[in-house]
Image 1 (cartoon, helix red, strand yellow):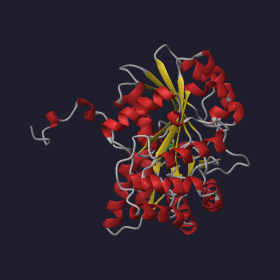
Image 2 (cartoon, protein in one colour):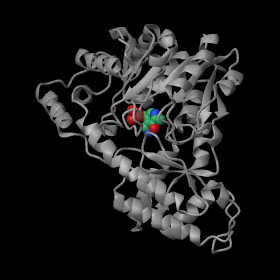
Image 3 (cartoon, protein in one colour):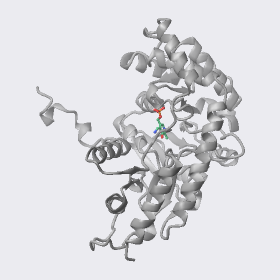
Image 4 (cartoon, helix red, strand yellow):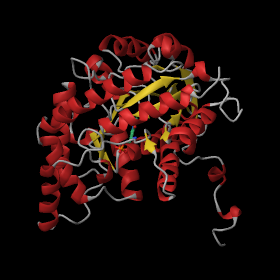
Amino acid sequence: MPLTEASALAERMSWVKESPSSRVADRVRAFQAAGRTVLPLTIGEPDFDTPDHVKDAAIAAIRAGETKYTSANGTPALRRAIVSRLLRKTGQSYADGEICLGGGAKQLIFLAFLATLDEGDEVVVPAPYWVSYPDMVALNGGRPVVVEAGAAEGYKITPDRLRRAIGPRTKWLVLNSPNNPTGAVYSAEELAALADVLRAHPHVSVLCDEIYDEINYGAHAVPSMVTVAPDLREQVFLVNGVSKAYAMTGWRIGYAAGSARLCSALGTLQSQSSSCPSSVSQAAAVAALDGGRDFIDRTVGIYRKRRDLLVSGLAAVEGLRPAVPEGGIYVWTDTSALMGATTPSGAVLASDTDLAEHLLDTSGVVVITGDSYGCPGHFRASFALSEDVIREAVAGIAHSISLLRR
Ligand code: PMP
């Protein structure tokens, strides 16, 4: 049957959405192709180049013939590098069988749900959430249970709300710290309080997405649930990768640590779907993880200046309330005060999309709407951009908002 006929696609394709970030990226490219200047505050990846020593390691691997399938769980060298990174970060020594590897953290999260969810199982997802979690849960037969974690709670799920969200079918809590989109970081005390709830509900595991942990503006390292509650180690699935910390988004290497049972299940799924992540990228990831902190320290210093520039610029615009991110590369901004305002053409702003369209039309600034993250009345603005572009974008936003009648 030709795939052009709708009936050739599975039913799930009628409700799964393309990731909003990819959709917006396509839109930005289309605007640029049409010759329009756009200021894309939508960028979801570091704008730095991958460090030279990492590229060199990949080139050396190609020359040495490391261009064949590896084990589904990666090369021994990469597994060693991951084990020592996890030991440095969490104080926990993971055994070889407690590590898994994927084509990005994204694929590992997908596979973790595929490996564990039966039809109707539930996953607690605090909102605002990274756009992919609910769709990944649903694609694997689960039901996302979205729990509000708003400004009043510092954008973090409280123990009480977690307790109330847990039912007999709950399999996972998803905890993303530093958070995309809000930049919130769970403190050790907050993690300990959530751990108390999980201890009382041993049928619930926690998927800790720590992909932004190295992009951290706090005085201390971002705490990890396994450090705070080592007794829950079997219940914690810790997901990370090299994409954000080392500007390696295109290399597609993610790693995770958890129970040997889960890691072995993910290895099986990996072996039946992609066989293994790219062998060349694995060699690059070893160089990144074992290569010291110079690149991270330098880039975080630059991000910090950009963050301060964007936060102070947005805070100076009447009607916008940006939250100061403690980690990551985004500023989450409350725009609810602008709802109901009128544009010069007489249109009333009734949704996040209306505001985003107004910004794009009047100053070429592109943001991602809060409703994509399960939290309307906000936008996410990235600062993985030069200071000049950030200044220009802030001036553009201020101009667009000055045109509104309230
Ligand atoms: N988790 C979060 C919260 C993210 O923002 C991203 C990247 N946008 C990922 C996971 C996926 O990262 P990777 O490139 O390792 O797949």
